[in-house]
Image (cartoon, rainbow, N blue to C red; front, side, top):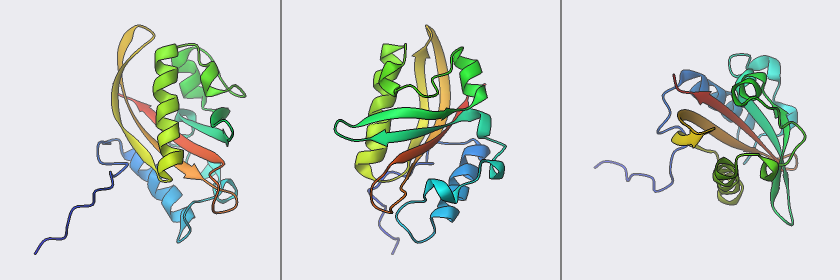
Length: 154
């Protein structure tokens, strides 16, 4: 008899980029048996292969909002602007802003890593990218950050 398939979506199921798999495995190792890794557990020197393509977001509550703490240089260069220190809802592209706010909300509300492969119109052009989003918690209960990495498809 085969084991029942999990109803819970797997964050890497649609992701083919090995850097994202490696980054996710790193964060899972740092999490250990706890529900979430904490920001203090991770060292940017451990993942130079994805550092330029990641963001670190602060999660604020009442209302639920997300602020870019760090935006990798590769992402800032790709988009032509750096949103470090700004809220996600300040993003200049309203369609993309709504899309990513919904994805970050899922990560917090579902209390688990999320991700996938996406095809969107960005800057008036069709773009494909893959991403993984991982919740972090300093106290083991409240998600206060999200670490996310994005790889633009060639």
